[in-house]
Length: 222
Image (cartoon, rainbow, N blue to C red; front, side):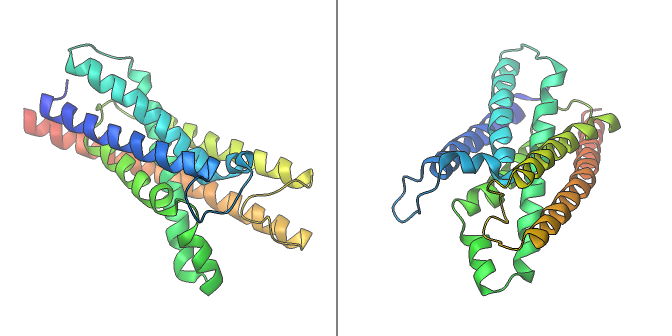
């Protein structure tokens, strides 16, 4: 069991993530803020950024319930923490991808990359808060190597969805404005391979950091 201080801090972090995600995702889907361009709401469901942040919202809500229960001395099912693990990994993929792209982008692409709708919250702040809360504050359940497959499955299912959109000549995220069919296909393939490899690498990295911090905390309490 975590100390009361850690649980309360975790409640604050998860509550903050939930509030920011609700605001950012509602704006992404419904575009109600002044100056934002109209956008079909269901297009937003085709972006890895939005789907990963929706999962982080769900995971943070679950962990908030776990926190409150633990604050009252009630244990929750160990499997629940896996959802937060998956969410932290896939939002870290979102974070890493955008911040790798920015230095190599030109003026126009740079504007799209860093001034897209709710980019600061969905690409940066929420992934960072999710990572910090999971590593340092959330319940310290052990992550096994086999658990790395879960965030990878998230990315692979997303890849399949994008490929189906492309094959059926529907609007493809990230490459929607490209007219060259062959170039668009290669871009989608490269992005999918890159995100899959990145997912595995980040998953192992998050697992390592979580276990390392767990060991440090365990040694301090002995």
